[in-house]
Image (cartoon, rainbow, N blue to C red; front, side, top):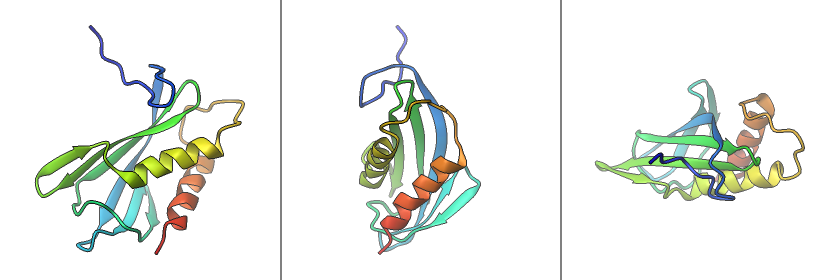
Length: 125
């Protein structure tokens, strides 16, 4: 039996990997930087539930147009899966921004990068 990743918004099983997001953080449970696709650093300082350099998130888009993120967060030797409020909020934000989008790109582009950066900058403290 095949096990497919389902979109948590609509349960559709056709999804595409759009981007990776690596979160750098400090010892005060705050982000310092988010690196998109190992290429685009975004400086951000906001509350972060984890304190580790081993945090990786994968941004997906289903063929119905919904964004969702699978999160992997390391903390003191344990890895939490899909328990990251910041990434949940980012996916919700992207779904609001692209709610009325008529044509799906199903790929990474600079508009999407700009919207990720806009969301993260709005979280700066």
